[in-house]
Amino acid sequence: MEEAKRQTILIIEDEEAIAELERDYLEQAGYRVEIAENGNTGLQRALSEEFSLIILDLMLPGTDGFEVCRRVREKKNLPILMVSAKKEDLDKIRGLGFGADDYITKPFSPSELTARVKAHLARYERLTGGAQPRHNAIIEIRGLRIDKDAHRVYLNDEEKSMTNKEFELLTFLAEHPNRVFTKDELFRAIWDMEVVGEVATVTVHIKKIREKIEVSTANPQYIETIWGVGYRFKV
Ligand code: CA
Image (cartoon, rainbow, N blue to C red; front, side):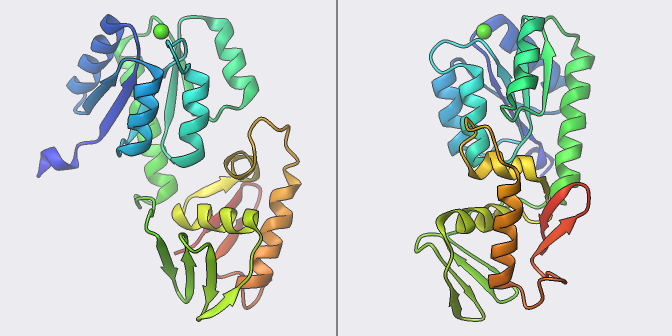
């Protein structure tokens, strides 16, 4: 039973010695660890398997760390800890908003690595309320039904027509119940991250979705505004 509850961390790192060192530290701290030795394998595994956290090297053969991070972020909600050998890269990670949660420079100490991992796992647990993201084709919450395959939304069996972006935004929020997202995070998740964003777009779309699914937009039952932070889908 204990084994089944252990959190699994994916290390994407092409330098074998570093990957093994990280694995040893993390296994000692009680985590289960998997290693992918290049960006393509890492990306594929990150998208198709369930991990609790990813430790992602920046310089990788094939798909580099920036690209892996960007593509994982489009689909998955889990902490990504970027690792780089160069301090200058960190400015880039910070500046470009690739969606990494944190970054760490090599060489780092075992305690530094495990402390960061632990902190991010705890933070995600808090944000999601421990709830696993929903990936079912049909999401149903208190009379609201989202059919992902058919791209349709129903409220008490009455269909509500939505634009593509409204549908994607609503589905994204509903798939991550109880997690608070900033407008910036939502913008990056739904719109093209390469585009320099008009974050107000998010506000406009939330307003339109609410007009369609909320009985009272002043007192929303589904998408809640967290003042000064962003939005959250209530379950
Ligand atoms: Ca590398």
